[in-house]
Length: 66
Image 1 (spheres, rainbow, N blue to C red):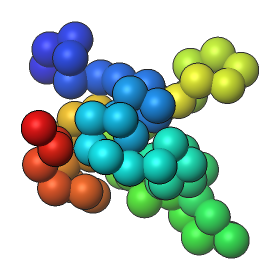
Image 2: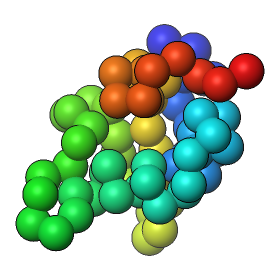
Image 3: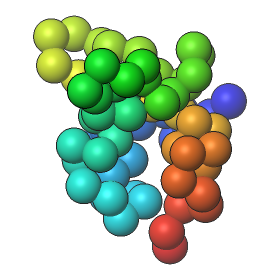
């Protein structure tokens, strides 16, 4: 895994053309639903920062928007 394969939810949202909250709620779950990311595809870092992997983003949202 490369360093570019791990990113914040804000960076991932920008790279995939999504709203930041879309990626964040995929980490947290929403309305009682479990997180959409699988174990090892996301992690909380510090008080407010969530990290996600490229593999998780591609699994949920398809290839990165170039």
